Amino acid sequence: MERKILNANQHGRQLMNVEKPSCLALLVVGLIGGASLVALFSRAPYSSSTLFCGGGAWGARAVGEATTTTTQMEAVLHYATTSVVPQQSLGEITVTSDVLKSVGPCNFLVFGLGHDSLMWAALNPGGTTLFLEESPDWVNATLKDAPGLHADVVPYRTKLSEADELLQHYLTEPGCRPDNSFLRGNTKCRLALNMLSDKVYDTEWDTIMIDAPRGYFPEAPGRMGAIYSAAIMARNRNKSGVTHVFLHDVDRRVEATYAEMFLCRKHLVKAVGRLWHFEIPPATNTANSDNFC
Image 1 (tube, rainbow, N blue to C red):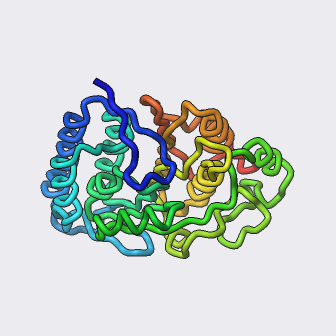
Image 2 (cartoon, one colour):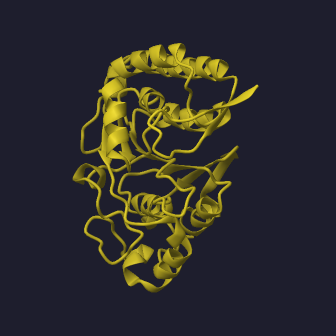
């Protein structure tokens, strides 16, 4: 029987429809356990050919040094003993989990902090996982229970009710153009997240999950800036390979519209439930850098 669970802080997050939460929790534990085994059995002697995606500004360990982390153990214990489960379905979670296993340990940027945060961190053993959250109270409450997570508070400057206006702004503001756009210090483009910490700007993110901020009532920040900024991060990548971007709640008009505009249908490689997975190459690898798509 389907039941609804409201986030504990009661600060206006969406209701989550969860079917058989205990079963999903056990399956999540299985995914985390699988990540632990992959990390354990991927140990190999170091050589100059050992390449991995986690070479960001915070540093990283070689795959051969990956071990079962404290975060993974905390996650297994948490999901094995709680009735509160991640918002995404198992199929949606598996899309991201499979990518993390294939490219990890890596730099993983997650828009949103919630019941699934321990899971995402645990699925990236040995990598860097950073969460961006709009609510300081929710950050404090979450980190109190999971102090090993890393999270920044983001004071978004947009409203969902401005979504259509912001698309017109993008079309007319030179500071938003993909061939001339940047995030840090960009005060002209209202879609650019120019209020993030230096560690966000100084790290090349291999995987980006967009499951926040809130985008289901007019005064909510909406995900317009997050989607646009993820596209800029991916296009400005200097390392080889693509940036994996996962966008949740694509059944909503704003998410779908902005995804088509900035993440691009041609980069969409998988769609499961309400999740779209994009593989976005650096702008230097594209034939036309004058537009996103």
